[in-house]
Image (cartoon, rainbow over all chains, first blue to last red; front, side, top):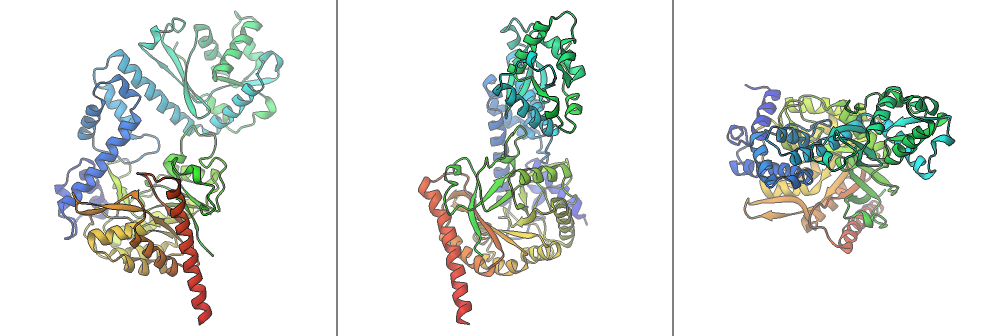
Amino acid sequence: MKTYEQCLADWSDELAAARTHHVLSDLTVDCSVRDVERFLENAVGERRRMLSEEMDLVGLAFDDMERLIDEYVALTPRKTFELHEREPQRFLRWLRRLPLTPQQADYVTYQESEYACYELARTNRTAHLAFQRMRNQCVTEDFEPLDHADCLLYLNPVCVWSQLEVAATVDSSAASGDVAFIAIDSRIEMLWLSDEQRDFVARLNVHAPTDWTAAANVDARLSLHAVNALVRQLVAGGLLAGSAVEQTSTPNFGIDLKQINQPHA
Amino acid sequence: MLPATGYAMRDENRPYADDPAWTAVEIDFKRADHPLRTEPFLQGLAFDYVSVHTLDLSICSPEPPDPQYLDALVEVAHENGAQAITDHLGFTHGVKGGAGVGHVMAPPFTEAALDSTCRNIDVIQRHFGNFKFYVENLAHFFAWQGEIDEITFMKRVLERTGCGLLLDVTNSYANQQNFGDDAGDFIRAVMPAASRVQMHLAGGYFDERWGRYIDSHSESIPPEVWTLYQEALAIGAGKVDAVFIERDWKFPREEGWRNEVHRAQHLAAVVAQRAQTAEFAR
């Protein structure tokens, strides 16, 4: 006699793999294999539809995305819902195992980076909200670093660094292909940084949040006006925001910032 | 007191949220929980009653839900000014992190399932604090062999845990159409055991291919469901907090949206008036 736990585990395994026969003996007499088939058609259809919707962007790089989704669904039993790892992320990992063209790989990277940003925003939610408030204020007030010597500079806590293969050749200023995916309000945007901007962000990242005076000294090779220009560019791009000290008492905000990805060396 | 009436909010019905009959709203957790959101899902819309509905607590599983998932539900409820959180009386998996069946389904109605379910609901209610928790009856694709019937199972869950009942009238109607369960019997037996009640109303269609009624949320609410709704309102007088209409496909035009919520509100008033008249006559 199987335990309740074992029954549910066995039924879940069977249905997740879209198999019917091993559950039939446990059904009531008024149910039939047709009912289980209807259930599976519904569940598999929902799973396919959800993946197809989530992959609408990645699908642009593939001629046969629907077939790939069918193959994935057929080969990969469904897993239970988890807040921090959803099925589209698992599908992208599966896709990565296939031979991809550079363009296809870039589309997958883009989508993976977007999901990684979602995860960062979920785990650093307080910091995300605080940063977006500060950023909006900077935009509204046309933030000028030199006018705010006492302010603190914050890096966007929802920032994921990636490398794109094909796209890197489009913008000559981003020779290494480094690109930052960042949250701007409730959307994700890509930000290409010059070598100078990337080095500056990497140094700021070690000290963030930091005040303007310290920021001005992170690289002795840069003049005050050069640093001012860099900060303005990064604020405009949404990677950096400035705020007066008294406005930044958000709990754990500084700690969370240490968790963001580093730009590639 | 009349129940608040309204819709499960979708992009398609949001423009009509100002309708005077739309006083309650149900928020779908997955829609409201976008990790990048910088403002609440309701975006300043005001309702008398707000409830957060979810699908993945798997309250009949052997293990309790993930605390992080419970936290996320509470956060969405807080930021939207909700009074309640709801999920189904079913399971989506056997082992946490293991295989998922893909669609919430009722458990086998056994003592072991009852114990697991009640223990999980206790955990959930402690976690939710002041947010009232309601469990919803399911439309069955099929049923597992068990030891007790669904009515007994549902009643004992409600009595042992004190949680609320989200009576999906259309789900009961679908079970009647597909398996011969009497929806009226279910409602008459279960409603008295509930401390508080919410209701779902929706319309589906009969699928010739499968020979089953499909609760597709794609059609107008059928007359039989309106009749069952009135019966449920009469039995649950004084403890029905809200009534939500669900529509996910084949969306109606503006008058369609407005008509159904007005009808839900009107019938609630009629049933309340009848009860008052009967009381007066005694």
